[in-house]
Image (tube, rainbow, N blue to C red):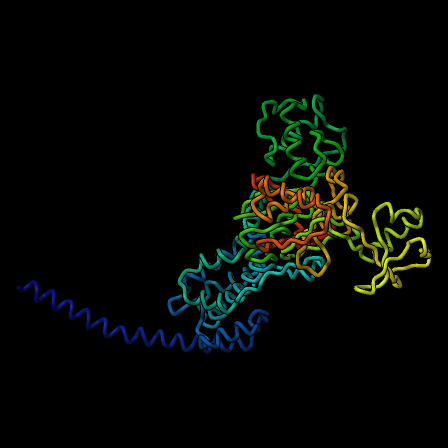
Length: 539
């Protein structure tokens, strides 16, 4: 009984002490909050270091609605979310970004400051860093319109107000920060390769090959040892039984073949001039390529669709992607360097059997009129018909009655149309999708061009190798029966338009670095020179 009384007395005493302390603690916190809010409002207004992000309406409103209460610290010190953000900034290189772009040195400078005004300034620095980092990693470090006039795919801007409201409501923001970069498999795969190539750089990269003969199976040469080491580094040479022997064996030839496939080179298992030049591209240059293409992924829309088409121009290939997996891949032909195909997105909703082809005026004047002058029967041989006027007023003109040498594209009153059939430049199937560039997918009678490695032969449109197979996938599931139905419609010879059962998104993209489904890293030549301006920015 006496023990219980003693325990009760201790509890009462403790409660009394807590009651004495608690008001003091509350008052201290209230005093800190009032003082810090005053400092923050003053600093936000004066912006002594001219942090551009602090002048944005979103952040001004955000702090005003919080009554200028700090976001990253309280009376006890820095909050957990401040550490989460600092960790992400320090590791910004993992996303192909530069930590120094996000005020890292300034944040470190103020991180341990006990002076009230400086600690409050740290709050604003962290806010500015989050604003800049989140925008960069979500929709791109650079505005594509400033760097690539042929890129017309635009990501929806990040909702900054929602992001900051979310951050303010959480103790830890690790997950919120993790969700900012693109979640596309293409981006995430490049991110893993970025870490791999950074490791290769830290190891010293690879040596350049000096000029030498074509290395081929069966030959002895001192550069064979260097070639083995080089292909081991990039994972192309898997089994290396003759590591210290300078003979070019079968295993090495297979490794060279794998390398050539990954780099879009002529596949012959030999190291000639083209393959040698590719091998001599430095690890730094490859790192830049990976970073550039991660940036392009940030320019992409976040939701591509459950099922979509993607044309990778530098790889000269079209993919049908279903649930993040390519269910069909097909070689394509793209625009010539002086009529390059732009990057854009659209919706495929219609296909056409046995299409007519109305030739663009510039092509008529620049490409076909000179041929007609050289061979007056050219239009007839290619099933072209010449018209003057449009709509109901259009009338067919005999090409022999026109003085072609007096025509130019600025004053050209005619238009040219090619009839359906085996000679038609669009082949037997055409796929239409929404875009302002008059670009579409179509077949071609020139099948031999698909044997070329670099396929830049069109006037901008995309020629597909097997339009019947593509049509079967778009109409149904790519079955043999569907292909037979399509062929039957084609053999009718009449022009028919068919609406697709489901509208399918299509993206024409320009990847010079990407990862295949088998995990192999691919690089391609910058065929249109669109990496050039980005290259200097990623040095």
